[in-house]
Image (cartoon, rainbow, N blue to C red; front, side, top):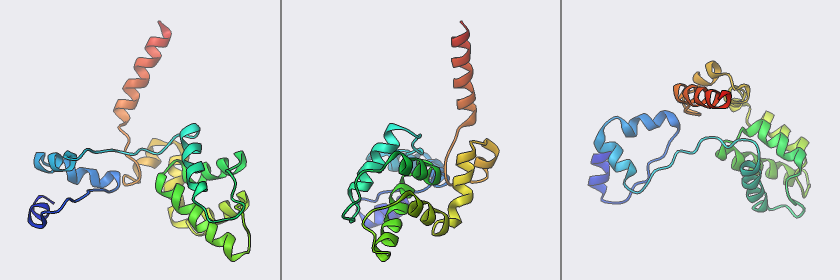
Length: 166
């Protein structure tokens, strides 16, 4: 990356899955270059306000006459199939919108959103199911979808429990 950026002499934005992060931090010069303009790691959003807010923003961009706002039922179906992964929060509604338009519908029903998630995104279901399970062994099988530092999580929770006991 260093040589390419130096040769091209144009700004380059480095992005990738958590697995690719190792490439950027394997050497100091790569890490410095990657962090030069700031860096961010986007973990999956937890279910709740932040997820629902972003889903509302995505819904506002749909080209359906009666898109409205996501109902609690749509939010639940969406979280089940997206697990807070931002790219899925954009991709699944876009594909669902195309299905709705093909069917002559002007809104997205929870059933259509689920149908699209299950059929059109079937290849990613094992990844999403691993996240949904919250089973660290299953999640570790897919190191390119999420990066968890389990030692840090265990240490943080141990400190929290000790503090609660006091």
